[in-house]
Image (cartoon, rainbow, N blue to C red):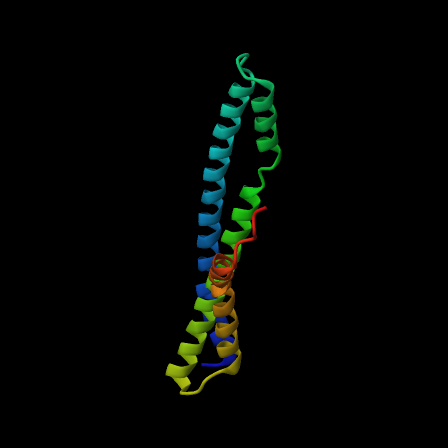
Length: 138
């Protein structure tokens, strides 16, 4: 099989994978949006309560202002989807070349190593942060 045929084969496998990942991503966004709307409705109801003291009201308004977790979660899901896809596609191309031709294409090996390192990076960072010494409290 020619390199063009390999590229077409990888493209035919990669495009449905990307559409499937996009579908999962969109479903996750819709679910998070519904949860956010429920949370905002609950906070709106709580802010309208006449029995709410001023300190609690300020705390609720501050909680509304610092909510950026949705974008962080979305970016994290996209990062993992891209790195996982890269790992699987480059590993598949590497295995195909190895089985079909008996040689190791350097680009697929390098892509597999880079994608695997990107895939495991969040776990490594989380582990390093967990093991970091806690700051002294005064």
